[in-house]
Length: 380
Ligand code: SF4
Ligand code: FES
Image (cartoon, rainbow, N blue to C red; front, side, top):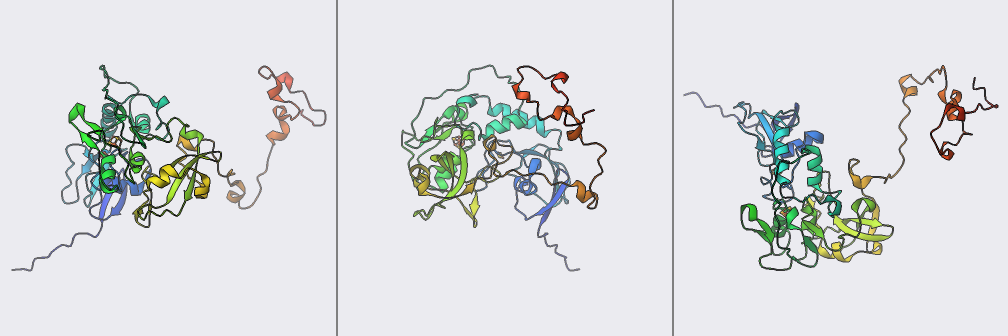
């Protein structure tokens, strides 16, 4: 009998997402493969959190179309799949922004997430950094078909640091994973089922253990907000700076973002990466302890490193330019060092640029007669 030739599985799997092919190790989820490509190709994620084991599979915002399962079995998957919970196979072809089905399905998911979510962004402390707000703008539809009253809950006090607004919760479970995996003891969870499911401490316990503040950082919506920061300021009026301190807690990374207004520290949070997740340092997630977060609210407690890099698409970065970057003058480069030959310099010729006419002084719209000829220049 001929020796059986055993085929070694490839060291890396080739996966094509929106016509871009990359190689990733086996066991990588479609979402994480897409994150390696980055940009619009990456599906949004409201419940998956790469630093929290077991997260994902709850919200369905990361749905994608699998047009070919693998090289060995190239049949398409019959339904859209949650990319955070589906691993890539060798030769898999995935469609996200190139899919005809995904936008509609995702808009449906957004509509479901917003069925009971109050549209209270103008008074919500998460506004400006809310993932659901961004998701609604990027993937939702303008209207709703829902005609019933939204869910309401009995208000529950969950402790001195964190404010719970259950009406805003999308039941992503991230905060329960934080409590399980980072704090000493979880005292809260999701109780009841279906329409009645709610975050609760059961019964009226205070969430005050040492790393519980990280629940605020992972909450994608305004369901868990910082009691020490609530209603103090809008996040886009503050100036975020990176800072560190020598924290004695061995589990605390001591690296944080301070949200300043002048010299005043309004809020301390962990530092976030481009996916809105807490950053990692040397392979370790940069969680911060409650002492750093809630008790060190003076700039002298910290060594300030500099301005936090904020995405240019974020409202938080509005009007906060680090340096004025003047674009490169490329004409000389393109022309091999030669200066362009101008047939006319518009700034020299146009009367509209007459520096003696101060347009802001006019109490009406300007007219051609305002641009009197400058006797020193030949405007003709
Ligand atoms: S409170 Fe926030 S983090 Fe916790 S389940 Fe609700 S939405 Fe998720
Ligand atoms: S991020 Fe994949 S299901 Fe929520």
